[in-house]
Length: 486
Image (cartoon, rainbow, N blue to C red; front, side, top):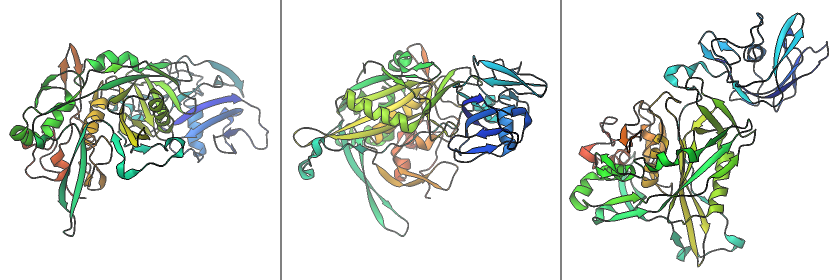
């Protein structure tokens, strides 16, 4: 695996003979580098995953000499990968993405050096995991939990919580019992979207908005979620398809499947549907240079955006309060091929999340805006069955089962592990480890890949499962029993 560096910018500088050439890492003081081939280069860099530490001099030299194309044989650009600064010949993978890079040839000590114009941003040293089997090797696809946030009351006025009226999407509540270690029985309450299937047939339709987000990066490239709106609207998220739980939308299908024995006996015409979405104006965001980069997939050749989750989450909250949709609706923020990293781009990639934002309303009410963000992605970026609406289906299914992001369940491990992973009712997260996590649906002339999800009985440890055909997941090929203890 190669060293990974995010090059912010660098320029040519003279240094004194006593200390030799100098590399200055971001957040750090000057550090001598013992390599005559890189004398005079001042590099602003972040070490992969550890921005506060200096990489070993040998690793730094490889990052400079290799990924910038400073080669003893004067080869500056690999002929096998045009537009890429250097190739890791051990793995055969490109060590960088450098499209349309302006280069300057320098001569020193009889050798030619290559430098890139100050201010350019590129990701160099893509790990050797970017082989075809792992897609573009930009990181592990994950989903993150964003707990409910409460904005301070307007004017700082306190409200009477005893009579506070909650305004949000239609929900129903229930509870289940579980015997903990030691024999203690605990009640676990939960809240879900719609009406209770235990109370008979009813159809709930939740108004929905799609809010496309256009992200423009510092290199001038724009990734526009609006380009995928029509495909999203035509997908199983909003259009009915022949599901295993009847002809209906994806979210309704997996929820009916989760409570199938109840639906079959008490509420055969029970449905929770998304209304045909209102597409709101595209929100144009400019990503600061220190909050994201745009690269080209090493295997797919597709444009990819990597964005800091802290910056993006703050922008979503700002957009939500500015647009101020009805709290009784579901806003869906849609991006294209843009994924979130934690701290720096080497710690990537979140594909979506759902959350809720509470704010004070009039007449002692509290508005709780539930919302979803997901990125519509091109095929093979992650080398798994993650493409088009996979991320959106994951988050929509979880919104159905846990709209307020507060449904606690007995702690559960991810499949293949004995360590506790979560104690939240997140039906999509339990499926993440499986390579075949999505399934194919052809609809309206397009092919889509919604994700499989775990059923309610998997989390509650019900035996037998009340799910479709006694299953613990929608497709039925992931689990043969409820979640084990941890």
